[in-house]
Length: 139
Image (cartoon, rainbow, N blue to C red):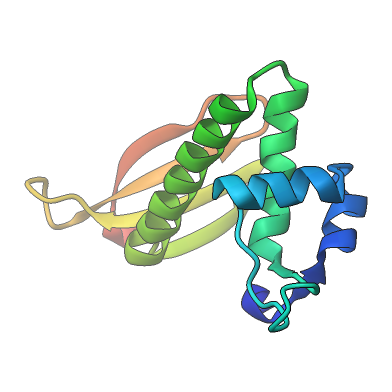
């Protein structure tokens, strides 16, 4: 789904997140969120799916007891981490296997380690994730 083509009005964002339109306008004024498109008179704000998720995350932090400014900061850090993980996965993920009780993610060779081994993350239900080096021939 192309999230940049999925636009919502301010009322839709308010309804989905339980953040009032008045509060959303305040957040916009403070620079915490930005409309994607608006009419020339700025009466019809349109927001992206990304903004919907950001508003939801900020409100979740506020509901957990954080101040608005701290909630925005935590949301921004979370967004940076998400972008870094997207980059890591897009850049390094070589293979993905479904196990009976989890998953294996092959991240390819590790620099400075044998070229014949790949770093594999093993994720199993109810267990901590393990990283192992596995011979490429076993993959």
